[in-house]
Image 1 (cartoon, rainbow, N blue to C red):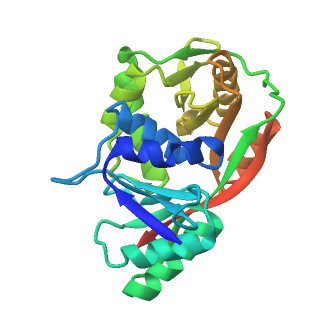
Image 2: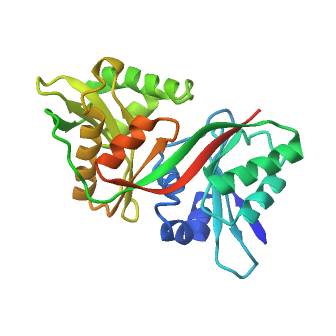
Length: 281
């Protein structure tokens, strides 16, 4: 077994790109991160901090069968990979101060975290258990209103909505203003207006990469909840995704939130795999 580390995006694309694109649903996060880094839409935080990545082969002459990517200070994101590769990676990186956590498929991420904790004495704390869903047959809910793209005029509305969303999911320091600017400009944010034309919900739609796109975040302010707006904006984005050529429409849910898991299944999403985000303390 062998891992290769690199801080060169072109090299990472050359070595790991075919593997990632061969499994677009399971590797949706890595593909999106890689795309945004290549487009200059995503940077790491802190002086001198740069994106890091690597790929794994079961033997020196075998095809790539695993990969990872990190934009510090965010944790490492693992591709689908054999558990033994995740264990080896944790051993190689043990003690690296930029490794603040790990996310990925449940088996791989937990194996990494267990090895990391054993090697470093750190405590591995589950931040969120998630389920990845894939759209099957779309069932559009009957909710009054319409979907429209977000514009720069919506910046003042979306920044506090984003900040509230990230505070709720446990990332209160996330750069909501920066995300709002980038994703509005990229045509990735959409707003649902109710029957009176009032903005009541919004959601994001990632760029289509090898036929795959992912919906998220999805947010409705507390005063507008309970009317089906999250279902409506999500279903609307499913239609936009297909118009843009997507053959795979994906989204993640928090397994601790039964409401979101229920509403997405009602409009046609079906489970693919479970994953977990784990922080190190």
